[in-house]
Image 1 (cartoon, rainbow, N blue to C red):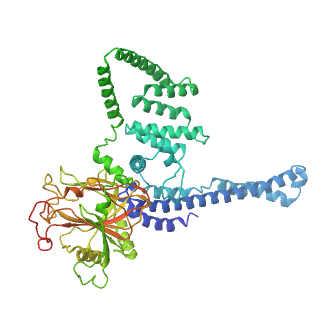
Image 2 (image 1 turned 180 degrees about the horizontal axis):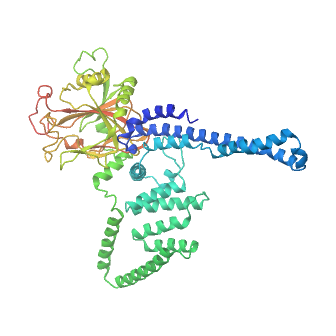
Image 3 (image 1 turned 180 degrees about the vertical axis):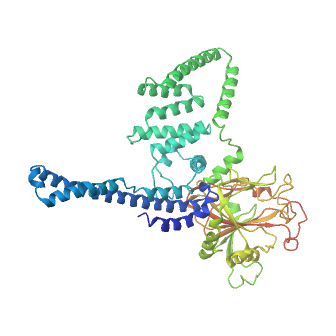
Amino acid sequence: FRMELPCWCLLLLSCLESLSANNDFFTSIGQMTDLLYTEKDLVTSLKDYIRAEENKLEQVKRWADRLDSLTSTATQDPEGFLGHPVNAFKLMKRLNTEWGNLESLVLSDTTDGFISNLTIQRKYFPTEEDQTGAAKALLRLQDTYNLDANTISTGDLPGVKHKNRMTVEDCYELGKVAYAEADYYHTELWMAQALRQLEEGEESPLDKVTILDYLSYAIYQQGDLKRALEYTKKLLQLDPEHQRANGNQKYFEFQLEKQEKQDETAEKETQQQDREKRDTTQKKKKKQSQKSFSLIPERKKYEMLCRGEGVRMTSRRQSRLFCRYYDNKHNPRFVLAPVKQQDEWDRPYIVRYIDIISEAEMEKIKQLAKPRLRRATVHDPQTGKLTTAHYRVSKSAWLTAYEDPVVEKINQRIEDLTGLEMDTAEELQVANYGVGGQYEPHFDFGRKDEPDAFKELGTGNRIATWLFYMSDVSAGGATVFPDVGASVGPQKGTAVFWYNLFASGEGDYSTRHAACPVLVGNKWVSNKWIHERGQEWRRPCGLSENE
């Protein structure tokens, strides 16, 4: 068992080396798949250890059974038994040699292989940041898609193939993550779900007292003293000596009494004053409940579009959108085999190309990108530098044209279909989204208040965006444009294209867009950001600012 370990451990290490430089596993489903194989290998190693222990115990058991029978016979007539010289010899041999061998067997450590394997692989395990990131992703999905805690806990999500229930401990852990972020709204939801599952009879090492302690405090923090007191009393019924709960009960009762007196005083005021006070209180409560998630109008529109609501496309406008076979003014590469193009939106003009990248090409791009995937970054408008951000949850890699003929071929295809110069474009960026992977509303182009955006490239602003969808997504993951109410769903093998700048060079602010959180599935995309330089004769300037 021990001799075999180095061989297969080295094979496993070669698979994991690419992950050691930069974890952030939760930001890429593609890299998280490697963790499943890691866990499978650990289970194999654990089973090997169990078999070794069972084999050792079986040898000890056979030895004990044999000696039990022998000593039972021998002790009935000790002198007669030892009168046989062979029996006397074997007794000496057993006590001098064989019991020593048995001692060595019992003391032999069969854990070495498993522990060594576990120690090696632990270096590549997800961190606390990964676990917290995955938990926050679940909370984000819950908000974006209006999911209740029970729906998520039972695993009853749209498009799921492998349904899995959350345990009481899982729900409790989500509640604790929210609690650590002072997000008492989600703390209440998940502690209540943990309590519900306990009351339904699910076995768990957690007890109701622990959960009720968190639950009552979370409700109190949201301003609901009456319900906080109710849960505190439930806790005290289970544990009358709970010190914190006893203190909380007295405090809540005092605050409720104080609140009732204030209400009585308020009743004596005029109706108008009472109305004004009530409006102020409501605004204050609303502000408190939304402290963690400031739902600005754009945010609301973004989440509605992600859920498939609020798409602002009238039937009249829809009737002006067409599909066609397209060869971009008789481009030689597409004259005999034009591509399928369909209009997705009119303002801004967004088109989709159907079956524009083959299965083999997509797999090759993923294969090239996967070992290099790193946490995706954004431009910091203050510093002009690239940095990670909580609103962009994905990993990305950049592929140059000279790395593989497939990349060069794809770049040429984009140039042929758009008519735009690719020499000044950014390299092909490949992105894989993680748990609840998203990219909140943003512009691809640099605004006037960002004079240093793309300065280091020396190729001007981003004139256009080309986006390949390299996987189907079971639920979520749409590209939405909140300002215009547009939603474009991910469809494997297709690509969408739009201009970020008007022909005048002015930014088209209606192209502000976002990648919705992936609810179920694995989202792979690749994109090409095309820049201004080199397009002077390919897309001449317009005569008006918004042309």
